[in-house]
Image (tube, rainbow over all chains, first blue to last red; front, top):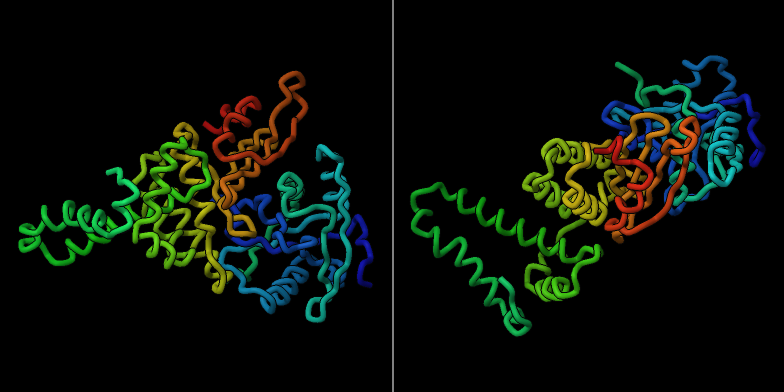
Length: 143
Length: 224
């Protein structure tokens, strides 16, 4: 249901433009930085898809994203654990920032979720979230 | 050539400058060279004038006397041309200019920015690819800090230029160059008194004051 907090042991994925990755294909904090118009960071709740393995989850996320965005040829999908992001940012940020991750379903994107608790100018928080990335996949299916 | 306020109210200075540098001196040679050579020279001349005008519009602090002179030059007829350029065209002009700077890694950097430009256009074809003001502030910064190593260069969601020098989780220096001449920075560095601990800080300063702010935190030990 909209607004429900995601369980700590679940995972979210985040589309990362190639313009936010280094030449060595590392995802930087800029992939988790908000635009000035954003209230939260858009992500997808993987366990909500009930596909039970990462490969299928990522394939489904690719389909959803490609219906909403023009996926860059070298863009990435980063996977993060909900509890780890919250703990890591709270422990490492100077103001012990408490993030929350909640379900924000959309009509054509039922697993859509949001990371709340920081603003477009919180570059440090975005850099910490980047450090909590667990897995990275190509945003387009490899040929 | 420094002009007074009266002279730039006419086109005379620009016409004279143009003639002096390209027509009068090169007219005889033009007959011997392919026509496109002259066109290239005209384009280069225009590029320099465009970049000069862009620089004068920088919000980076300048000596008031210099600033006044530069401001006077803003009123040249070429400003109209600058104003006609789209943000993408301005960014492309700055990339061309980058190739002519004394930045040691200018070619590699120009190539990286060109890549970011194209990738940004691929994903968001209807938006400006890179903020030209941010790019201009970044290039000015690199010219004023020649000892820095080649950084990772990426874009923020608002299409500002961002750099990152990171060699370890506790040696991390990331900077976003804002269009207004300020920068947002983040530093993760070892605590000098407790090397097993990491100091984490962030802030906003003018681009002119960035290195003075960051230096006490030891960033030059991994950035230069």
